[in-house]
Image 1: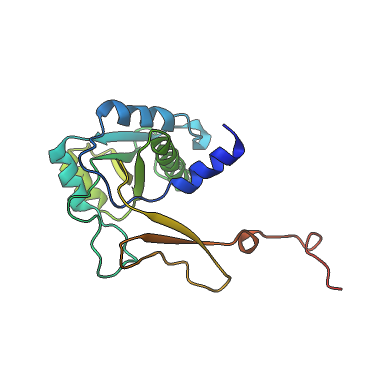
Image 2 (image 1 turned 135 degrees about the vertical axis):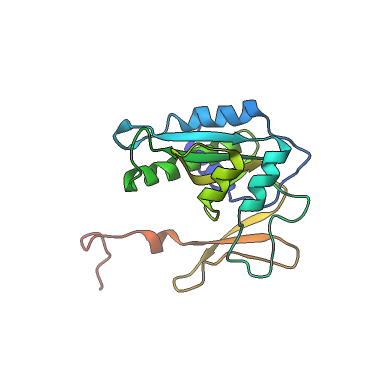
Length: 205
């Protein structure tokens, strides 16, 4: 893959909050995504993460009801009716392998991003969700006590328009939707996120 293709993949891998419900996601596809995730780096190579695949409609509905989406958009309930994800991957920490700690929390973010990018290559999309009650999800899925749900990745075929924009320093980075339900994601400019050493900063004339 050329670097430009990789960068385009990163740009296209957005947090999708609207899906084509007619496009089901199979157990085999979810398994492939987990197979990609297991190659991700892990703190001390302990690999304490476990993955619960959710693809049966009844379980999908349970998990959907326990998650909250797009908290920054007040007065808008997402996903819209008829556009919910057809599958989820619940990323859990297995406390029988290692006690939960900051390093392993970082691992969760790494594997979720790996899943999201892998889904994009499959022609699917995803949304990494953290707004849920771990205890409620554990109970709904019948997870044993030693598995702690950390993040949930929604998976499905995207059915919405998402536009990236750049903002000037000091402007809001809050995402928003227009009257046509197009979702806009402001990103800080490259120059505004780089931390330059004093030696590399341009000298005043």
